[in-house]
Amino acid sequence: MEKKTFYLTTPIYYPSDRLHIGHAYTTVAGDAMARYKRMRGYDVMYLTGTDEHGQKIQRKAEEKGVTPQQYVDEIVAGIQELWKKLDISYDDFIRTTQERHKK
Image (cartoon, rainbow, N blue to C red; front, side):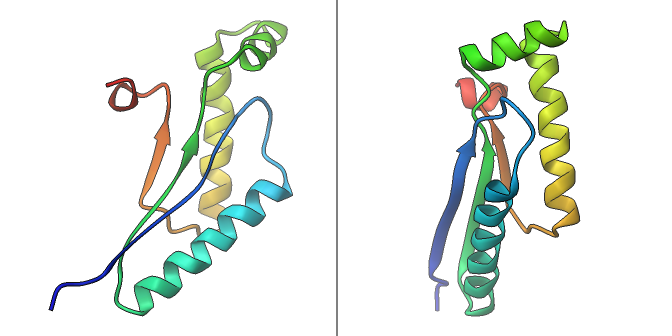
């Protein structure tokens, strides 16, 4: 018998600053649902990530004296570290600056 599939995503977060408790809440809730569906035998795809384009990011990067890419790289490293500490079981972390997203 073929497994049922279940696709779940968080919002694709806008990394103009460090995340706050609301981001963690949403991601933990999604993680709980993904784990539940896996326990029920579903083939689960749990996606999270960041939308790394926009004027606010550019302005924040300029304020810090770095490029927008350097700025979001630092923020995303913090996000991924937080997800690791919270034991989030995502299957993919998409970044809109990645080549695979640009295609």
